[in-house]
Length: 247
Image 1: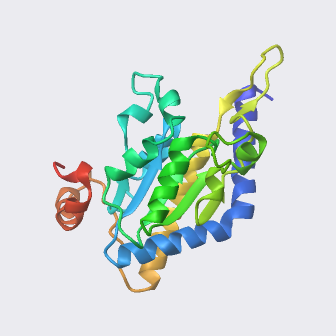
Image 2: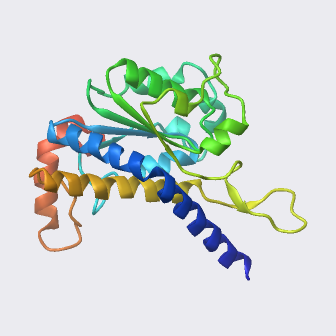
């Protein structure tokens, strides 16, 4: 079998394992989000490094829900600066991130971190929880159980959130060992994380419809009427979503 086919096969396997063990947690996450949105609240998502892509994935895109706030911090991405890795390991910066966002009691905060060992994601979850938010982590339990935490308390991300969704991503992230290479290739955490967050959104929309509350689904702005429907949603939620204020 070619290596690219092996990668896809392994990716399917990871997702299948995750779905088999994490279905209840995905459903519970969707229930919390449905309740938050039905009550007029916002769902906040945070990820640093490559995990920021999972938070960004469901923001302002067709098929997602509008009241989602990605807690993006350019200092914690790899957009031209690899120092994001160092900053993610800096104690105290998680508080700075949370202070930049309007997180209210009862709202949901989702923190994505494959390794689950670095201070900033852990701090974001802890501070959000202190503010009365319900916290959800999307992380690899296998990875964080294999490595020591980088916070003084010794806690990992899954230890400080109300709910943990285990991605089943293997320790080290990459899937494929190629003979002669010291390190494996083919990272998988982003693909699995994005699949999980979209699955949660789908389940949330279903639960809201069953309860008689139409979910605020973002329409494609590339189909007739899409711009008008989107404008109505932005008018409704724009004051809570900083990135939409000029949309």
